[in-house]
Length: 173
Image: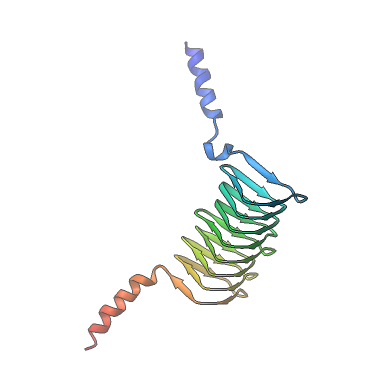
């Protein structure tokens, strides 16, 4: 019985968390899909999709998407996307990626080119290689020297600050 208990303890250390064992589908470079792509697991998209992509796990885009993109987290590597990009978790856009459409993510690292409004429900890191034509909305912003941003900046923290200034304005009377 003691040996059986020891084996169970060893096996409990072998089990991996559920999120790390999600299946991964790969859309290779030579594949073009017309229509929506849906997966509960992870996707590595190297080809071309003319339609929406809905991914329940991590989506890595290394190809072209003409349609909306939704995933738990997104990593854009030399990606071309024309459509809205949305994820609840981490969003990374490398310096070789171009997105035409609004972008919404959690903590976000922007190093590429975006024409559209960008919302980070967390911190936003805009690298020197970034070019953004659109408004930025964020909780925390790190805007590096060299980055090009043509748009307005909206800090979630500013909502509370605005109330403070309204109250202070009354004290000037």
